[in-house]
Length: 199
Ligand SMILES: C[S@@+](CC[C@H](N)C(=O)[O-])C[C@H]1O[C@@H](n2cnc3c(N)ncnc32)[C@H](O)[C@@H]1O
Image (cartoon, rainbow, N blue to C red; front, side, top):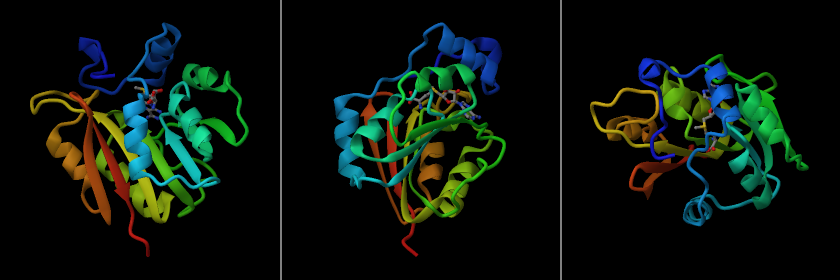
C-alpha cells in the first residue's frame, strides 16, 4: 500500500478493529510483497530455520506465509477477526494466528526476551505510541541480538496519522538500536532493519 486510504472522518484516529474487518471483507488489499522486498529482506535478515518470528498486524498472513517459507516458526497477531479468518484459510505447520490488540499491552504468553524476529509491516502508524511500542519490543520481546523489520509508508511533514510516518518519525523509530539500516522499498514506503544489542 503506498498510502492507506483512510476516510476523511477517520483521518485523525486509528481505524478500529471493526473498520479493518470491513476493509478485509470488501477485499481491500495492501502493498504486496514483491521480489525486490524479499531480496532486501534476506540481505538484512540472515535466515535461520526454526527461529521464532512474530508478525504483528499480520492481516491476511501474506508475510507470515513468507516467513514460513524461510523456515521460521511464526506467530501472527492481529485484532481483526476477518483478517485472522483469512490468514487461517491457509493452515501451515509451525504457523499460528492469535487475536491481540497491540495497543493493549503485551500478548498473553509472550516469551519475554525470547523472540528472534518481529515483523511490523504497514502497522506501526496505527499504534497509539509507535516509538514507545517499538522500544518495548526491543527491550522486552526480543532476545539479545534479536531483530525487527518495519515497513512504513512515508508521508510529508503536514500529513496526519494514521497511515504513514514522516521521515522524522521514521528516524525516531530507528534510534537506540545497536544497528539500524533504512532503505526505500519504493517511492512511498521505507523499510527499517533493526538489531538489538547482543547483551
Ligand atoms: C495495512 S494492514 C497490513 C497487514 C500485513 N501486515 C501486510 O503487510 O499485509 C494493517 C493490519 O494491522 C492490523 N492492526 C491495526 N491496528 C492494530 C492493533 N492495534 N492491534 C492489532 N492489529 C492491528 C489491522 O487489523 C490490519 O490487519
